[in-house]
Amino acid sequence: MSELTHLNERGEARMVDVTAKDVTTREATARCRVNVSAEVAGLLAAGEMPKGDALAVARIAAIQATKRTPDLIPLCHPIAVHGVDVEVTLHADGPFVEVLATVRTADRTGVEMEALTAAAVGGLTVIDMVKGKDRTAAIDEVVLLEKKGGRSGHWVREA
Image 1 (cartoon, rainbow, N blue to C red):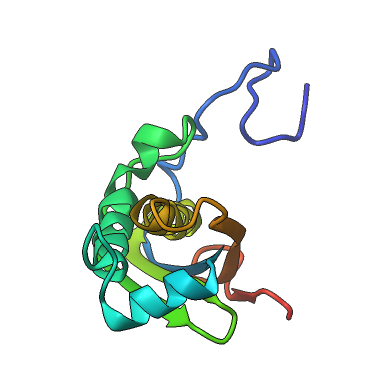
Image 2 (cartoon, helix red, strand yellow):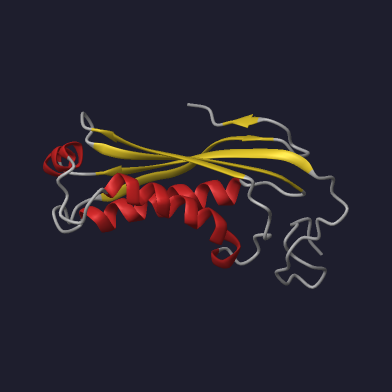
């Protein structure tokens, strides 16, 4: 009926069967950007947020989210996550917080959704940690920056 991979012959959603695919090393990097007020940027830089170290909490939340991705995204395969690196950086000149998540595996399908989920949940955690001081804090973007491995090889987002 359709060339869409996540639909069966009746047009119903399904999880793609990846059994026949080779296990290969795969990696993906995603970014979330959270705009914050100048006041919050100053509090973050000084480590004086009322809820504590917002950037550290966001980093741990992003790592946890990586492992929960198939519970959140209905057709996402549960895969073995072998490595997660998360950098949470305050850019006071913006002012914004950047969450950069890189996820690695050796499996039959990629980790793009895991990287995107990590970045997004890290960003949401920043908002939760700063909302008492900045009700306008907002996610500006969640984007996939790069993926490596698998059938489609290496892909980098153009600037």
